[in-house]
Length: 86
Image 1: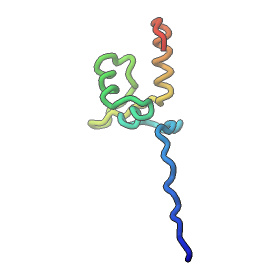
Image 2 (image 1 turned 90 degrees about the vertical axis):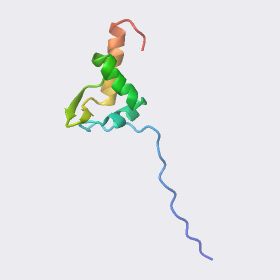
Image 3 (image 1 turned 180 degrees about the vertical axis):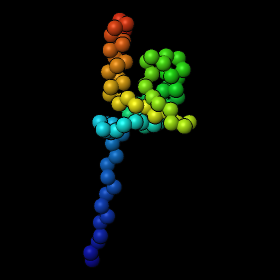
Image 4 (image 1 turned 135 degrees about the horizontal axis):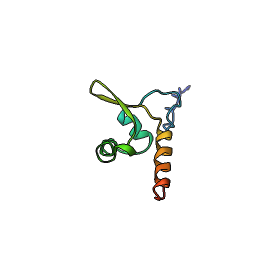
């Protein structure tokens, strides 16, 4: 008797690195890339815009124009300048 084995589903990686050539990120995609909640991103814009991700508005949407890695480096550098540990 021949049995047909279905191919297993592809493995899902919890956090895949953001593509380097991507021009913009939705708030949800950006938040997922740096392991924060969507609400945390909006709170950063409300409380400390200088430490929040850079964005442009397209209609009602905010498109984050900063790569997640570049954003984290900028925040880390600002914390070093202000004397806070990362």
